[in-house]
Image 1 (cartoon, rainbow, N blue to C red):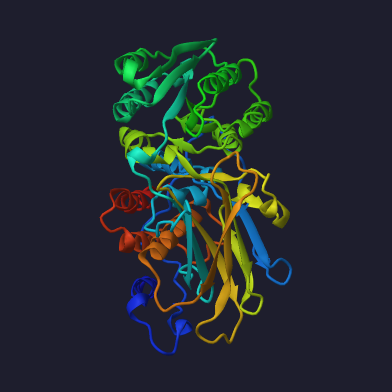
Image 2 (cartoon, rainbow, N blue to C red):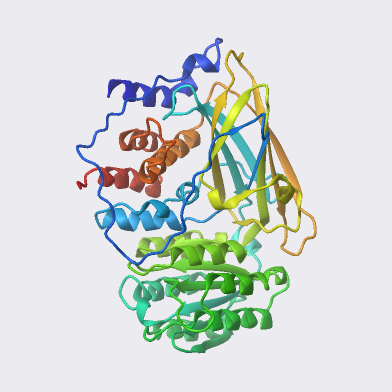
Amino acid sequence: MKQQHLLIAGILLLATACSKEGYYNYMPKAAGQDAVYESDPVSPPQSGDSFDEIKENPFVKVADEPQSSFSVDADGAAYAYMRRCITQGFLPQRNAVRIEEYLNYFTFNYPEPKGEETLAINGEIGPCPWNAGHSLLRLGLKGKSLQESEIPAANFILLVDVSGSMSGSDRIDLLKSGLVNMVDYMRPQDRMAIITYSGSVQKFLESTLLSQGKEQIKSAIRGLVASGSTAGGAAMKMAYEEAAAHYIEGGNNRIIMCTDGDFNVGVSSTDALVEMVESYQEKGIYLSIMGFGYGNFQDSRMENLSNHGNGTYTYIDSEEEMMKVFVQERSHFYSVANDTKCQVRFNPEVVESYRLIGYENRVMTAEEFEDSKKDAGEIGAGQTVTALYELVLKEGLEEGFYVGDFEARYKYSLKDAESHSLTESIGTTCEISPEFTFAAGVAAYGLVLLDSEYKADATLSMAKELVAGAAGEDSFRKQLVSLIEKAGTRSK
């Protein structure tokens, strides 16, 4: 335990502990396997929730592949799903743990874009807490923050699952409450339509300007009732047609789909739905998906649809989360960086090997990174994205070494033919930021939940101290400290 506390303290105090002897004099000792918890967390009960298998990214030798590319993923669904599981007394199943979504649930304190750019990038390197002798590279991206008056008019299509599986206080009732709150924050120039689906598809509310029908929209939302089977494919087609019919040039044309993902009538296979979504990609219409419920939750389907639909995927587990998504972070619904992808070109004289933590289903080839036609992820106004690499550096390095170049490519608009490029060189410094420490803590927590073969000395106690040391006054970061504590108090 003493070793572990020394490790945490060393990382948190590294910024004030620099000396002329350089970075490597402050590489921490190995953490012990001990934990502050008396027993392991319990596994989740059996349920019908569906997740794609996670196959972790391996270490790659720089001599074999000097560059690593991936699409950004601004989703936060896996984190909110974990929170629901922990709150109910068990851990999420292994395949539900997507570490990139744990990281990107949070907003990081990253610099704003400069000049005409709508994206900014940054990076830093420091010691890896769970693997003494290894290093951790943090990459950060931030979409340009916009004032309410700077965000174009919205053309929102609410695509609402009102099938029987959506019945309940944690599903349709929670959704209705959040949507009504959202309407209160929309502007007179914004418009909204509602399409519902169960055994059949219905245009529940024609596209309506807020200036002409705010109360009508709220009344329609309150009138939503869940019953019947689920014809999601036909509903999605109608939603895209409605979005196209009221398309706002230069506006925020977006379908917001609210569902547990259980489609069982009509077009229902994930591949067929993805094909439909992709057919509307170039029309400039985004797809955001809000997932609800537990027991028959089709995560794999919803993540696939959002990945191919120029949108994001969020899991709603509480009224607090509804307010976060639909009110506090509503600017994220407007994308300022489209088809955003990242590449790190490692310095072979410094880096022996690397491993991208998370982003398993977002990895790209070098050719895909360079192809402006290749679909990638979106970043909303004021939204941040974080990625981590675990690095094995070569021995005998002097201070001030250069790790490599971080490049991000993005489009201002989905209709742009070519991507825009930003590049940042990454070298060592004496200081590491609180954002590095917090990201390391989140990742350590994810590695433990995932029971990763690469978790090395990561423990829940390590994750808790790292997160707590960099949580500041952010209520969501403080909540994570509590969740880690709860994760460790369950017994098998």
